[in-house]
Length: 153
Image 1 (tube, rainbow, N blue to C red):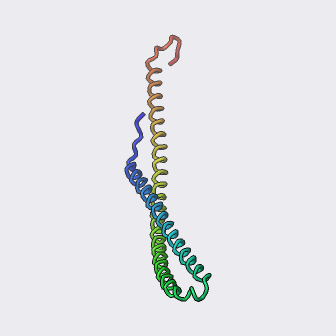
Image 2: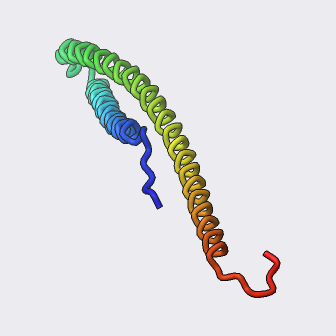
Image 3: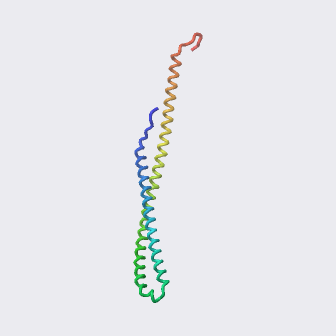
C-alpha cells in the first residue's frame, strides 16, 4: 500500500504551531492582567487602611497628618487610574489575540477536516487498486488453469 502524503501537511503544521504560540501569548496576557488587578487591589486596600487608621484617631492627632495622607492618597489614586488604563489596554490586546487565536483554530480545524477527507479518499483508491489487482490475478489464474475434459468452455 502506498503511503499517504498530503500536499497541505506543511500548512497544517505551521497553522498548529501558530495556534499554540497564540495560546501561549493569551496565557501570558491573562497572567499580566491578573498581576495588574492584584496591584490595583493591593494599592486600594493600603489607601483604605491608612484612611481608616487616620479616621480612627482623635481630631487633634489627625489634623497634622491628614494633609500628608490625603496628598498620598491622591497620588495613589493617580497610580491606580494608570493601572486601570494599563489593564484596559491589556484587555483590548487579549481580545485581539483571542480573535486571532479563534481564526487560527478555525483554519486548523478546516485543514484537519480536509486532511481526513483526503486520507479517506486515498484509502478508498488504494482499496480499489488492490481489488483490481486481485481481480486481475484471479482472471489470469482462471485463464491459465488447465481445462478439464468435457468442459464446454
